[in-house]
Amino acid sequence: MKITSARVIVTCPGRNFVTLKIETDQGVYGIGDATLNGREKAVVSYLEDHVVPCLIGMDPRNSEDIWQYLYRGAYWRRGPVTMRAIAAVDVALWDIKAKMAGMPLYQLLGGRSRDGVMVYGHANGGDIAETVDAVGAYIDMGYKAIRAQTGVPGVKDAYGVGRGKLYYEPADAALPSLTGWDTRKALNYVPKLFEKLRETYGFDHHLLHDGHHRYSPTEAAQLGKALEPYSLFWLEDVTPAENQEAFKLIRQHTTTPLAVGEIFNTIWDAKDLIQNQLIDYIRATIVGAGGLTHLRRIADLASLYQIRTGCHGATDLSPVTMGTALHFDTWVPNFGIQEYMRHTAETDAVFPHDYRFDRGMLYCGEAPGHGVDIDEQLAAKYPYKPAYLPVARLEDGTMWNW
Ligand SMILES: O=C(O)[C@@H](O)[C@@H](O)[C@H](O)[C@H](O)CO
Ligand SMILES: [Mg+2]
Image (tube, rainbow, N blue to C red; front, side, top):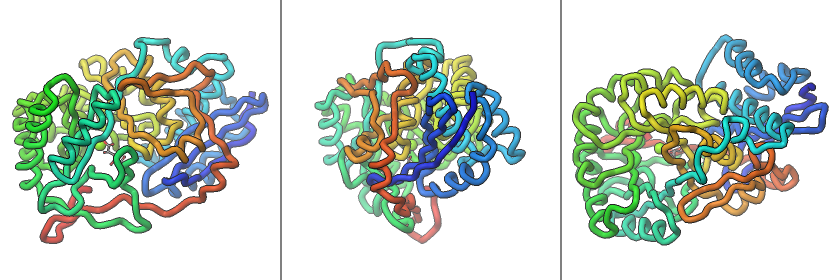
């Protein structure tokens, strides 16, 4: 069996997606996602110029060997561009394998470990009152777990506050838009949001919050401590994790569960955090961390330390990643939760899929493969549109982490 073609399809049904379609001499094809928000074209070139020529003629059944070939063979390892390109190939090959076996992908991983996948949605508002209403709307939609983000008085466009209610998309301008940040103001305001949420809705729902890499380790510890009475499911990316050791300080001061990893690309980014039990949830995802082949190694390492998965699932991860993640989540023994930011109707039409939402849970389908396809004719109607993520500056102009 041979790979006969591999094509990169770029489409922008409201936002940009990069998709790899691998075709074989036996008529079976597979689809993988390679989207890197704000840097899409870099992955397109990596795939078209440097990966696709190597793939032609390879046996698509050898997905492990092809993974090693692309990882070791490049010599220049890791990084978001390389690992997304590898992820796209890997997921397309698993899709092919499962289609050939006539099985839904989760069966190849080890079968079903649960009935469905608990997801969390994104509620946000310009201030506490608006966010409290937004959380109520998610509860009404049946969600069991909700991430709550609020605007902060005196901060211009604080992270996490979208224009739309269901389709928050931060990459919203042809050049990066400027947002503000003030840690002190956020530290004073955010705990009040969760106080109000618990007062209004009680403790039956899981609540989550994303610090989006903004706080220093000491400030992160303060936030974690201040949130303890509200029993969060997790506090995410509360400080940047390039320095994995920084989490020791946070950990010593708070029992609020910590989640990290949406920007991780390999097991090496998470190794110390996992082995020292500095986090509770690992957020690495299929498209970001080298596909299923690599993500399951991360999950297995995490399981030794009772750390559970919580795959990234923002809208910049295409339905291909969402569908594949649901097969992974259905199987992985140490599953925690799955992020689920809904795609727009345009995106759903370009990527026909068989997963479905019901009362706070997502369910993968039973079709052979990962269950997500691409309608190429429709995709061609939405050409690439440059879009950047915002940047953030402090009040005095200092560049900060967005
Ligand atoms: O937890 C999350 O979903 C966020 O951190 C993301 O929305 C992130 O900002 C985007 O994926 C960036 O492209
Ligand atoms: Mg996040």
